[in-house]
Image (cartoon, rainbow, N blue to C red; front, side, top):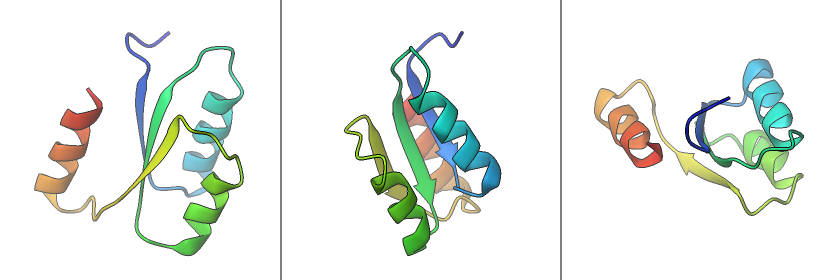
Amino acid sequence: MLRNKNTLILDLGMQGQAVLYNLINTNEKYNIVVVFDGQAESKQFVDSFNLEHVSFRQANVATDGQLRSLISNVE
């Protein structure tokens, strides 16, 4: 079990989608931040769940400063 209920998912490839699906379908409720590269398919995937505790951030995670900022905001 995680200490806090804030979760950051980096990208929505097959593993990211599986993590998101599992977190949404657990009995625990998490505040989920999904970081994606701007592809419309990624946003459509999350929007299909229509959940208010899932939010989006578009970012280039290869940039160290952006990644650190995202992590600190979720902690």
